[in-house]
Length: 221
Image (cartoon, rainbow, N blue to C red; front, side):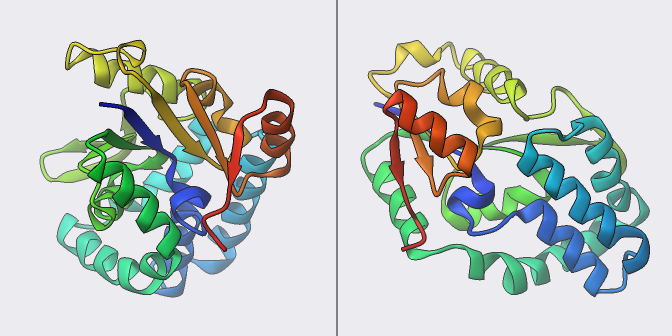
């Protein structure tokens, strides 16, 4: 049995679910456009440049969850899935996931985006295991804070190792381990697997992949 890990945003999705969630809330009038749109765009640029302060971003991204009931958030998310997310899931991404699942591999989505936004997306893709940044919950409400290690850069490696250790496994215990990602931010986890794959990579990752002989594929064509 192989281990197969998938990044989500701009890898299995032809877009970024974090960014799209904020845009969706702005379009619904939940967030003030003037206050949030420019900050959302700036955080996205910082992520692409590799300069994102994850703590500052999560404070911005999770704050709206604490202002509304879980029932209201779930209702918005259902609409978000229909309007924003399903159109971003291409046939290539679905086929890639399906083929690995049918091979009997242990599959997981590993994403910096919080689990409220991404858990329904993982279910849509048929992936049981999700390793994501976890928003803190008290009772049935989000607090606007995180719990545990953010699943970002080196934090992805730590979270995957913790997940496997809880089942008495390690990355090295699998005959082959795969990680599919588009971003240079994911180099730490790409370096930990035996089969790193750059998927529609950003310029920095494309250069790294070429220098190291990593496979490069596209799920957009």
